[in-house]
Image 1 (tube, one colour):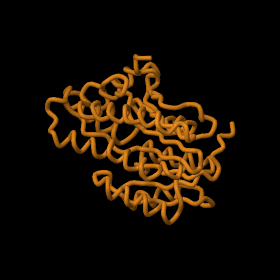
Image 2 (cartoon, one colour):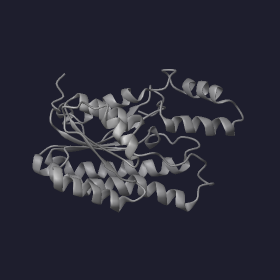
Image 3 (cartoon, one colour):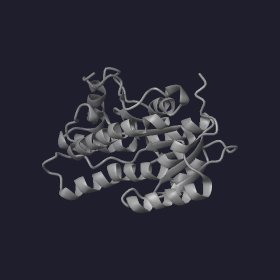
Image 4 (tube, helix red, strand yellow):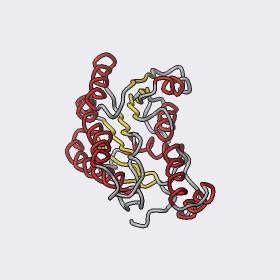
Length: 260
């Protein structure tokens, strides 16, 4: 299938590792010019070295705890290099824990790093998409948008807010050829999942190996996803082929989410 992505420009957030990195690699393989975004310059350089050398790839160093600086860095890049047809919103999730034990600052930080950053990135990038008559905004969230996950109180709350922000935005920009969709990864082999397993194992007074087996058993597929499997879905939604898919949540979870 020709996804018609050749020479499109993509901004991939949180792309120094995990699903973000896998997405950057998948898009680059389809001929997309990828701009990586994360806070660790050395990790960004390492990912950049893995992308095809004959394309116009680059990176932006920015911290999602400072949304105004993030937006400023993106606007400077756009002014110098041109805009983005594709935006992948992605950053690390809030710390695991019960909701009653969460501090107000944890909610504020999660809201800042996810919803505020997504919003400011959209304000910076949508004008170019409108002029091009093509745009894709894809938010990597969580299956907790459909079914809250025990022990992820702050994350469940923030992810739901981002899901509703995304749906609202999809109404407003569709007439310009821009789609806004959410990908909801289930348990995926990333550093964040390793941290969650460690915390859950400690709470349940069991080993990380046993907790891994328990969590795999939650999923009908009986395994965790690889980041590349989630990246494949994101890449399809970024394509021209997916032009009439808008405002939806797509779980990539091996069938774990029980809701339709």
